[in-house]
Length: 190
Image 1 (cartoon, rainbow, N blue to C red):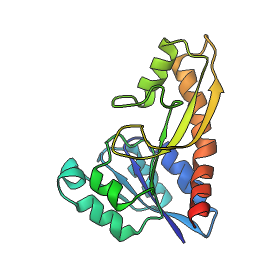
Image 2 (cartoon, rainbow, N blue to C red):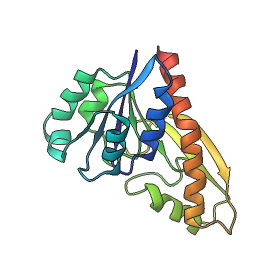
Image 3 (cartoon, one colour):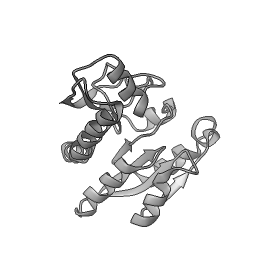
Image 4 (tube, rainbow, N blue to C red):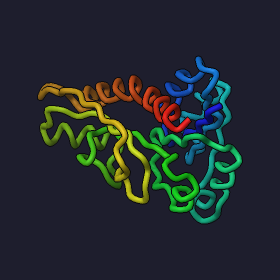
């Protein structure tokens, strides 16, 4: 069985979408969600969906190997970042080569890097009068939003679109494509 572990920092809408997508399959399951915020909305979603969810602090993630030990014990086929805002430490990247992926709410390399996430991205896209934006799913390396691109999908935006409208279009792409790309990756590495 393919085992997915999700790392999330926020409300968890992408995490819930992924959990629900794989709930229908027998060969892939989300076995655990890890969050770096004890108040993250993803915790309530996991409780409702009956998926284990663990929270951790910066020391457990960066200074010692607590999170690494938990991840190793979970034996993930893939680690999926779904709105996870901390940079992944080198020890995790080395322990899970080509097994950590992220989704970013822009067409990288545009609007990537430290501090570029969520509404900050959509506001920058609006401010720069872009005519399209989209999503990028990529492998995680030791730099923000810099790993090898796996998949990109764009959507058109108009001058009348607000940052909220842009966010809505990007979320629709995320919900449609992220679970399918995860599934394709798992099948390819099966």
